[in-house]
Amino acid sequence: MMDEYIGFTKNIKTKLGIDLNLYKEAQMKRRLTSLRNKRGFTTFKTYFDAMNKEEVLLNEFVDRITINVSEFYRNPKRWFVLEREIVPLLLQNTNKLSIWSAACSTGEEPYSLAILLNEYFPKIDFQIIATDIDQNALEKAKQGVYSEQSLKELPTHLKTKYFTENHGLYAINSSLKDKIVFKKHNLLADSYPRNMDLIVCRNVLIYFTDPAKEIIYQNFSTALKSGGVLFVGSTEQIFSPGSYHLSLKDTFFYEKV
Ligand SMILES: C[S@@+](CC[C@H](N)C(=O)[O-])C[C@H]1O[C@@H](n2cnc3c(N)ncnc32)[C@H](O)[C@@H]1O
Image (cartoon, rainbow, N blue to C red; front, side):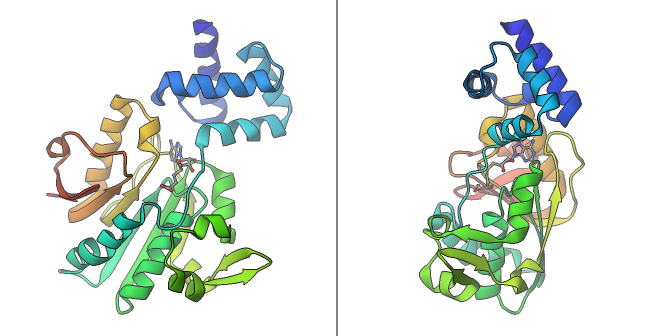
């Protein structure tokens, strides 16, 4: 029932500060209805009441809306372009980079950035802010311990150099952790940092409605320095970058003009 879902989205917004109406509806509703049914509730009202009483249900629900899948060097070719083309471009006028990994999930993306910079640009200084709406994902990111599977795209010599293996789990070296500040941030509600050289925001905008995306692109553009770059996911090309003062630099990289 349509009205029932609308009521539910209002309750969720009040409780969690997450506006489900800004996420593509058909997809989101399908995901949430199947979880609700799996837990044995026939209406969103009874499901919400139960979530209010049982933290486990609420956490599972947040998990379902956030979709935390990630990996190191996701779409590896793009990371090679970042290393060989984009970072050198950014370093033409500075030797200190401010970087934002937005919707960083469990940390694979900001740690990939830290590894790349440390390995190939050892003389420069950099600071990475890594944010996500999901506190549980951020806690995992701060621990920095990963399965072998999440490292499969990372070049082997980097895996050997930057991780310590223990019983099949890989812990990231603590020196890299100091370069990253993890913080909770909602892309659809919170204010954005400023003066960024590089913003990496990948594999989250696909879940949002077009009007929500437009606001986010505009905010990213404002958050970038002139000459700064936005790096998006490999299904997330921006259709009219010019309307946000962005121009295509390389596939999935946009420069602020
Ligand atoms: C599929 S992961 C992408 C992780 C990483 N960027 C990558 O490409 O591998 C999507 C992340 O977006 C986060 N997310 C969803 N809605 C968000 C919002 N409104 N603000 C910030 N992060 C959000 C989720 O919590 C999840 O961790």
